[in-house]
Image (cartoon, rainbow, N blue to C red; front, side, top):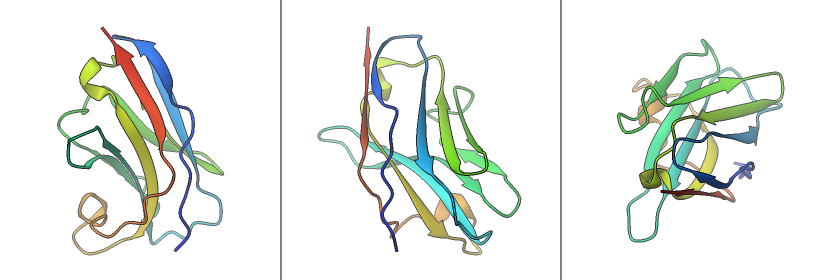
Length: 122
């Protein structure tokens, strides 16, 4: 499966916003799109997914209410608002086949691609 490169990261002050992007063209409806992050010394955390068939999003509790995943014609976005220093991490995107467990549980073997760094200062 193709590995996708996330983009749009940067450095912001706490409380600020960033929007990350990942290409989503030529993705079939049975795919899920996901965003994960990993900070140095920490485990990878799946933060958001969206189901291409019904556009339903899911979020990790750590970002729920602050992040929004959306899809336009060619791109999946992760809009990040009210950023906290704890959000500092490398962010990655991937497409994964949907399973009966749902998108949020479909990324165990996802082909995470090139990440984009998000740094939130206090």
